[in-house]
Image (cartoon, rainbow, N blue to C red; front, side, top):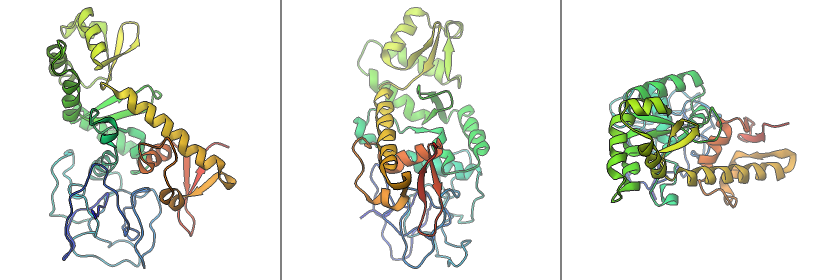
Length: 326
């Protein structure tokens, strides 16, 4: 069985690395990890649980947690590329450093991005969508919201990620790797008469500016007339914002939005029907996912906790999930 940690790098002597699938999940043994992510981490007999909401970056050791001992060369559950990530780079990781990373640092935000993206069920959409996450999901992992926003803006300005308006509210922005966004946008129109136009839009508009939306004047300045805009809307790379302006979009993203809304309703319904309108996190993780939660319970928990529709209350028995509404 693949053993995966949402925030560590480094092999344990004698342990074998097994390739991970689309949605890596920790099967247990990170209770002593100083960087616990709700919905991903499991149990380690004899170690103490770390409360939900600490920084998601596992420095590759259990040092720094009172009563925990240092494990040489990393946690026993690891994903390559999450610890020692160079700030500002979402790809290359270094195995050289196991020093703890401060909460809210660029490295911790990069690790949170990688961990939540890894939960995105690409197979659910036939691999037609790039891995997407919502910005507020990162707030459940890295509690310094200002640090998250600052680092995401830097990655956006450097062209590494795109922020997208998904129609879920003014503050609910999607985050996607720019390279994967481009690949899937071209894949959606491959072999059609619109392929050349979409490629030109990606090269001359998307790659040149980090905007969330474009108005008619901006599109004309980039060389795209009304007929071009119509074809770009048909292709799914633009959606109508209002008269004369358009949001940048991912082709086929409506399927993700519908799945997210169904999943939210499904998990919230479980909590509402429970006694005192609260559920132990462990119970929700171990139970069969409710109908409608096709995006996966861990992915949806980051959404609901980050959006503060659910609250996590620490208890001696582990975190308790409670409705935020009165």
